[in-house]
Length: 391
Image (cartoon, rainbow, N blue to C red):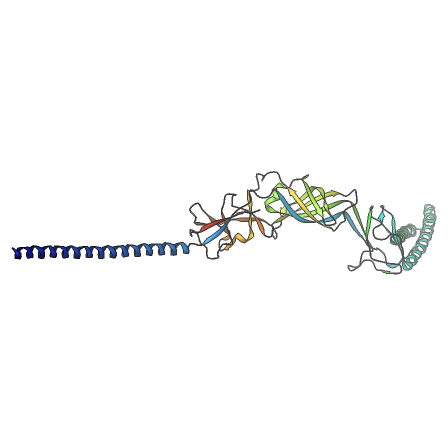
């Protein structure tokens, strides 16, 4: 009986030991599996973090909507007429009557030149004309006398023809002397320097007693006269706006000396041709300077305001100049698509405003990368961050 009890106790002890071993093995296996799962999860998190770190963060801006309808360009004001007044005869300046800034009328005397050599030549030419006139008169009387004699058969026809020829030669010599007198009188008339038209004297480059030399390429104009009742305003317009430049178009401009005031000028003519070197077209505007406020040669800032883009002008937008990419294919920008991948977009620059550019090829909804990395490529994933809108 006692042995049986011992056998039962021993069997129960073995069963408990077996379960303890099984439980320990299960616990060990559970700990092992849990550790492996945690390690796999950490590895996956590390891989995801590493991959996320490889995707660069970029700042994106939205272009300003349809390009500016105001085009601002520099220009130069010029007088309606400007004439440098030169001397046509040599001599010394006797007197000048007008100075810079004075208004003159057409034909008004500006200065006088003392020309003693021309005066002497004119006196000699007049004396020569008198001699030729006397010779002509004598030849005429002689010719008439011989005409009467030949009618009476008192002289030969040959002698009569010689007298007639002498009269014709004397007449020609007198015409030559008369022409020389006229030339010298005209030259003597150039002693009086007169205004070619009504205007303002803008320069005087001579003084009393100054030597006047005419007819040389290096001769300096004695005066400059400008008609400033109207002013011409010249400006070079980019080719993209050339089709919108029509006669009568009104433009507004400012000048440094009247910064708070805006003046109006209307388009008079255009060159109707684009300069191949600059890609611009020369445009001439006219301003009515009845108030005599503006001066020729002054710098002006002209604003052309357009209503709508126009059929010949493609829609455009403004972007920061820092967003440009210069690639082999030309000027481009990097744009972020809806899946946050890079697309290299070609653009055309219409106007350079310094820190900003007016370009075509973009819309206000485009997400343009500002300051893109030099190695950015088509299809690269990025993490965009909104920075606002271009002005």
